[in-house]
Length: 317
Image (cartoon, rainbow, N blue to C red; front, side, top):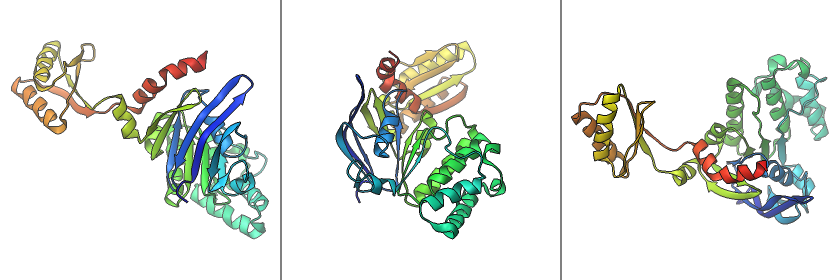
């Protein structure tokens, strides 16, 4: 199977509002695709369509090799889905939640219990396995929800903003668990509002805007679309700022950008390490004492804002 997820021209309309306007996606097995975009861009509708919860108005898609419209039962047997809120039964214990799902998935009493214990161990929930899920913290509930998605060992996992509302430690724990699943060959489609989450987890990123794919590539490829690497130099004192700006101007083809309040100068260097070396030599020759000297790429936040600014404005109207 060349692609675990393959979508062509997906369209979906709710009344007069076109939510998906011809979405194409390709996701190779054992990789993570991150879907980014402002609210209302169509990310969740895409996930629900690929997970067979919605039927597209046009286009076609296959997941794990099966058509989502013609073979929805086959697709459901091979996927796991975690929505934006933990879907666990709060009256049941953590163990009971997983055993129930295993029994419903046809694993049998013993098989369901064995699988539940494996997942409780893997997700660090064994100590709370006998407690009612209503006593779990938000991070524990999300871990239990993700474990529940994995009871049937799915080939493809859909995660729709899985770490919304979690503290940084809980978010990192969930990221590590997602990476472990990918190591085992699971394909993940992830929607997120956290740019660092996509940067950390995704092999490739697709940016949505107004129901369309407006950019696609690795995080590095998308960052290069926004701009080249830049050298940022910080100094201590207004006089040093002027001297440093003049020195950096001699090492670069573009005029330096000076932030007087932060006492920082940014300049684009076209020829990589050679330009950095010339900049350092010019600063040293001018006797400038720097407090920070670093080459920085555009952040994924800058990519997001530049690519989706117009689309985000449209989504708010």
